[in-house]
Length: 416
Figure 1 (cartoon, helix red, strand yellow):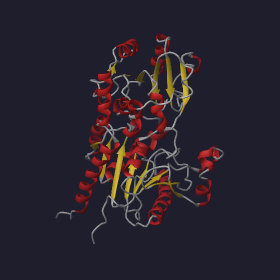
Figure 2 (cartoon, rainbow, N blue to C red):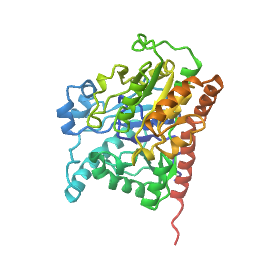
Figure 3 (tube, rainbow, N blue to C red):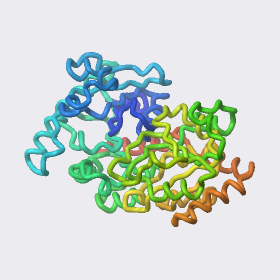
Figure 4 (cartoon, rainbow, N blue to C red):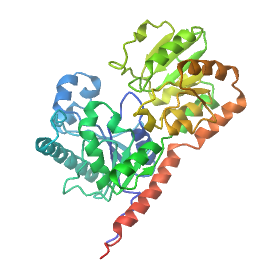
């Protein structure tokens, strides 16, 4: 019997973020793009019983309460999104990550997987399908080993960060989980060239390079349209140095503080969730020309970019960042604004013809001044054009070609 077309059955995607999280993710952008042509079931990163006890009063948990506790309305069509995009809330899971590596952890993690898998299969059937594609977008803690009755047409795995350099919580079981994912997947790919090389070497399996991209249709508005100035920026009369994204362990806070001191005639604005606790001793709130807006929806970010004068990527240079193709670089370039970054990875250095790259703090600070003084319309158009060549639609088309090849290979009869 001929298999149904792989581009019509549901894509089931799991990741380490939730669909309504407070910052954009590559997984969510890919899910939205793929949903234009086929159903996509985006599986929330599961809550454990411990998570629920700690966070049950939060609005984001309250809206999921019936699904988490009673199994009702687990599958929801996201009507604000285009295409066939659904969110799936899994049941509450056992908190197993604190367990040491060994038999007990494997049994308990397997128990969680056997709770998650039937939930996914039921959602696929609710949409009227039996076949599906399973797409694990960097969640090696769940379903790294697929249960016996969980048999997708194709199993995809995407790596988006150097898990061996991340925080201990994820590194503890994630390193081995990721290796297992790649070894068992029909198709694996990584979002950075360094990560691709490392994982190919570690696993002995072919890992493709699928770099991050931009929601160009959203971010081009900062270049092509006059946009209203966000209310937080309206009192600012100085030039604005801007950053959008997670404010976390990747940021060089010493560099950030120095920029604020050396550019007292400018305002540094950080748009995104603040997750810097434990990563710096600097009292960021005491810096007078540093403003935090908090997280903003992806669709609103062009409003901020349109009113920033120069954009920064002040990342540390370490084992983690050297394997990053930053999601925001093409978002920045779509706005046409000048960009200054540290040369933290091969992938960011590939943009060196369009952006300023400086490692030393004083050089980085000076580059901001130079970029502002020497910006031109021609340079802005070149940046914007580069972003137009790095869209999620283009990435997904490449992914679909790889999926066709992987399915053809999987269906070939075994030799011998």
